[in-house]
Image (cartoon, rainbow over all chains, first blue to last red; front, side, top):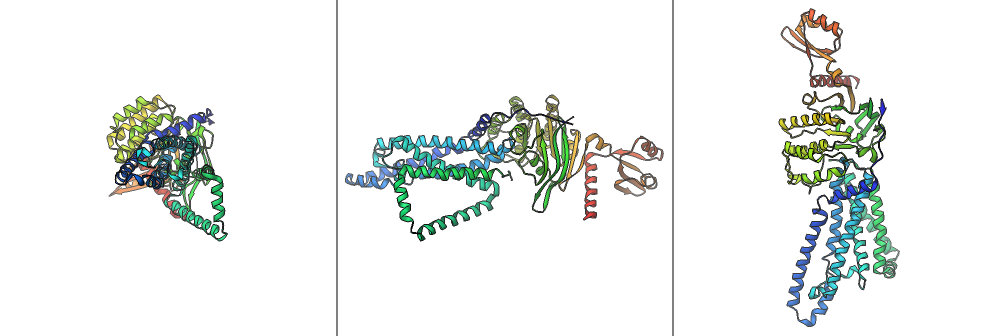
Amino acid sequence: MTTITLPSPRPITSRLLSVMKLHFANPWTTITLPWIILGTIFAANLAIWALIFMNTPASEHAAIARGFQWSGASLYIFVYMMVVAIQAINVTFPFALGYGVTRRDYYLGTSLQFVLLSVMYAAGLTILAEIEKATNGWGLGGRMFTAAYFGSGLTWYEQFFVFFAMLVFFFFVGAAVAAVFVRWKATGITFFFIALGVAVLAALYLLTLTDSWPAVGRFFETAGWLGSYAWSLIITAISCVVGYLILRRATPRT
Amino acid sequence: MTAVIEVDGLTRRYGSLAAVDDATFTLEGNRIHGLLGRNGAGKTTLMQLLTGQEFASSGTIRVFGQSPVENASVLQHVSFIKESQRYPEDFRPKHVLRSAPWFFENWDADFADRLVDDFRLPLNTRIKKLSRGQLSAIGVIVGLASRAPLTFFDEPYLGLDAVARQTFYDRLLEDYAEHPRTVVLSTHLIDEVANLLEHVLVIDQGRIIIDQDADTLRGSATTVVGTRAAVDAFVAGREILHRDGLGGLATVTVAGLDEKERAEASAAGLELGAVSLQQLIIRMTNVSEKEFEHSA
């Protein structure tokens, strides 16, 4: 018997594009739902700001607005992106493999997709933050997209970078967690979080015992808002690579 | 002849269990192969190994001459929708059919539409609300319309009624005639697919116990019916696969007979009958179990 010689594979760009499109085949989970939820939270916040605004004397509005800067409302969108990443990988990985996609192409395409989504959400959030600044908090002194932890005194592109860095961070940490789940299921997740808990505790102990907290403080002070967010990209990159190393040996199971 | 799949000494262990145990076989191109065996025999694991979804513990696999594992050149020619295939939960069938052509260059959308009508698949219902049969229909439609040069069907009929199953067999044969490709069909409804198959692999407890042309296999056994004395005299010294008796009559399944032996049997007043593929395989798997018990 002779063996067939295969034509060369489709170019990698076309293969990755297919995987990216797969994540958009039904945009509900990755695009529609997050914006709906964000919109709902925003509407609820507006209502609360208005309520407070109407029921407090004008002289206190400035102080109240300072309190608003600690709003955690939009933090939700970042954590939710981790959920999106986990869901997306968990449901599309076995499906894509049935379509004859290699794990490598799947992970690369999915990663590009996450970066694309991060750019999209970061752009949206930056626009909302700019509007919030320009309208002095939607006319109510409200702060949702310019909350304190998104940095202060940043230009729009610096603001965009902060949002982007946070988004890719949560996407790729989510990708790594999803890879653990896809490969080792619930047992893997249990051990993963036990290990993570132990590691965090160990780090806290170490920092405390070695009196390193001031050094940590100085680190963030020196790095500044932008620098600190830039450093997070290292953890993001590590998560991305670890996610691939785990998924590379995963098999779709039922 | 062209080998599409070449497997040598392939084993996949899960702990102490060998789901696929030292399998060696070759599958020719442009034929319909049956991968038959009982539930849990190792059919799905074997197909997952052949499609690079599962990793071998030892042995080699060549698909189109290359290892399928993480090999885009090979896998872009492969379609494998598992019986237990998971679809993205928020998908509806229309999303599956919309995304399939991005991965299968031979995808035929018109054919897919016709199959949707044939199987009465609702396109706009959420995947998790579909019945078992409708889920199977999606797998069948993707498997057929993708026209992948190497297509695997893993128990594709679960939950499909008899009419839908016949539709699947008919469409498969029609389309295969027009667009020859290599099909591997795993099933335990052997009689239903017997006429489709050109080559048969039977797997039992992870081992390949039959690897034969379907025609050769069908001719490999015969039932001999007659009076007990005449049957006993005729089958003495032959390999007996199965024996049944009622009163003074006996029915014995023996390994294939040649022309001369058939004439002898007729002369002895015995009736000869064909053995269905299903009966044959049931009997052969029983034999292998007994052999296994003896050797254990």
